[in-house]
Length: 82
Image (tube, rainbow, N blue to C red; front, top):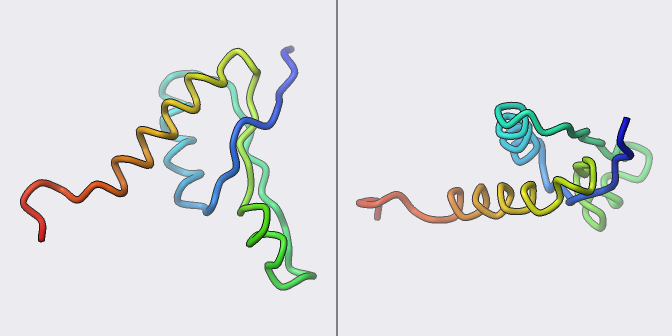
């Protein structure tokens, strides 16, 4: 089994779900690690993100491209929207 490494920080559950869906479709092995921060009232989440995605290093470039594409599709307004 390949070693997994931290690939990118996730800001929220929605972002994690979008990545999970695409990675499953492409059969890319991954893990999503959620930062549990109830003791400090969410301070760690603000500084270090909601969680992170880990995967084998050989998938880093592909995962980053998928993430960037997802980010662009959520920030670009749909054609015809005001």
